[in-house]
Image (cartoon, rainbow, N blue to C red; front, side):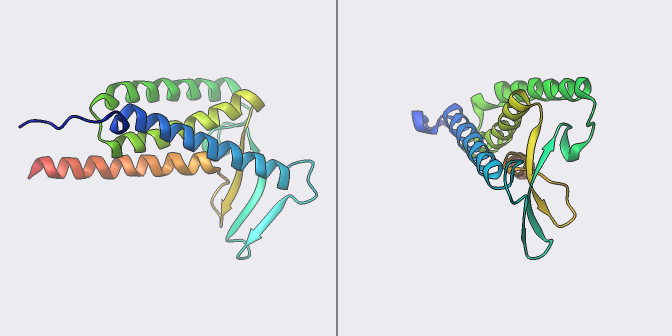
Length: 165
């Protein structure tokens, strides 16, 4: 069976790259808005929607997910660098033969990771600003990472089921 040739627009590398850029820019612009609206120099530091169900607030996270390991910069940077190396290996190994859906999912994870890495390098912390009820604060990059991981899991499960039939 002959595999149809992809156009340059459909290239998994281009889809991945575009996704990374879009996710990173959305995160950067959202954080600029949060700093202006709710940051340390602002008169307002919290916005509540539906009482305490959804809150927007300014929070500097020097730790990793959920603020874990705050005050342990060596451990945090070690984990960040290991995650970055793992992501680079995943991208390099997977994208050459990936579908556009896989390329988008990996791009969501990589774009979110890149956006948080930029924060960490520039400021020494990641800016978190979204709180859902009792869930710890997170940001747009974290949301895209989560969506990307869930999408990857769904795509892998679908692929395994299709191959089993």
